[in-house]
Image 1: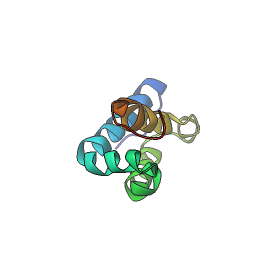
Image 2 (image 1 turned 60 degrees about the vertical axis):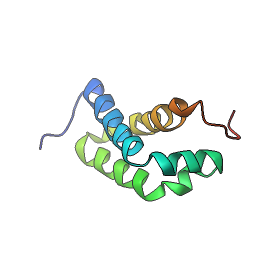
Image 3 (image 1 turned 90 degrees about the vertical axis):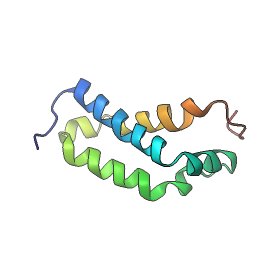
Image 4 (image 1 turned 180 degrees about the vertical axis):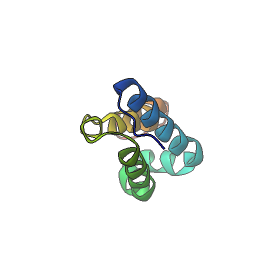
Length: 87
């Protein structure tokens, strides 16, 4: 597999990985938000996704935090309807 070298492609990959996390871990995400421990509840899954992202992009793209931003957008912001301590 080729290493991703463009910001646009890196963003797409990060969002795809985060989207999969959201899709396959909905219950854990909801519980994590409600209990204010999302990162602890999904630690393994988030780290597995981060490792995948890191293996597919250049080091300079990895350092731009596209993956972390995608996690926030798709696992936290997208769940704004969930009652939790964040909002």
